[in-house]
Length: 163
Image (cartoon, rainbow, N blue to C red; front, side, top):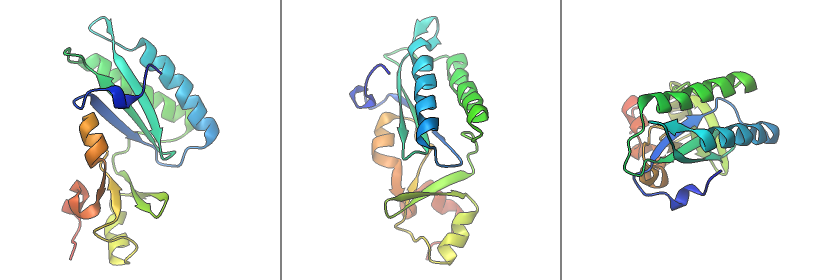
């Protein structure tokens, strides 16, 4: 890995890939090797991409790209999606299902399907202050400031009735 993402500018691109299950140490170690190989040789427009990644909460693979004035080409972006699809197949996990969501319960991160949020809310297992993850963030700034947010401040609330 080139460097820690915190050294990247606030407008660095971010992609959040969430697994549909918790990753164990062996899976994380495997991902780190594969992702390190990928980001160290990732190219866009014939130039190496300045990129790094983090595995967060044993669940999320977050890729950061400092475009340094050059916008990434679509092919380079597609390559990261292909990689995550391939890694998911190898590990028998799904990193691309956007209906898989998560929330915090104490120190734990719980994985649910999007349509389960209404049931959890109705059963008082979560409330409007429950921390959820906005995996649609697109910049480092948004990742640091708007990735973990209370349910009442998230896009998830559009799908729920919060009284």
